[in-house]
Length: 229
Image 1 (tube, one colour):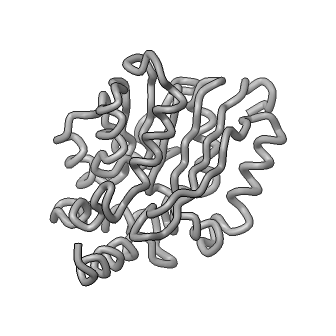
Image 2 (cartoon, one colour):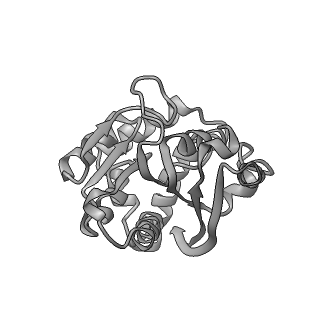
Image 3 (tube, one colour):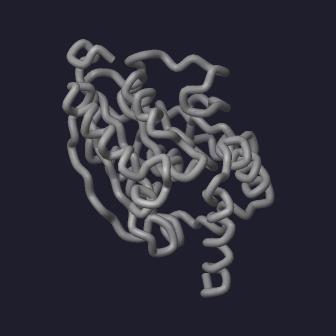
């Protein structure tokens, strides 16, 4: 991409995360952006957008064996970037949770998921079983009008004790997205104190999107009886 194309990609992505955007507005935008082919052009995996690769690499390190039997939920799966990476690594039981019909349609064409769930995290259209998944992973689902802080409670609920939660997001969102500023990390820490999960790692990586640094959170879910959640 030349600088003009990169600037356009940044602007198009900003529209999905602009201040004050609602969840429904964001979903509608993703559908139109995806169906025109603009999403995968603007967010080129490994080019302008490195988040999915970092998220999938983390999953791979935490599940080095028996990958064909590991149950994973890709939250805010989009067009299937994380799913593609996981599939190439030998993970065959990956479900996609994505609220944008247009984005999910593109993901279906890739054939890398076992099940396709058209819903938001914590939505009511489909029931996700408690303690069902070995791992949840999200890249690109955190931001203005996207997954709220309470979404991590749902991640903990659906992951088995001993299972893993992987969150890859733009680092600066921790400071200027009102939903997360002085809320998301304190909530994560409080949940750890309560015994709901334990931190494995918090790391910074380059080029989450167009040169912006990303932050990768890795947590292991503990026995629900310890926290009462």
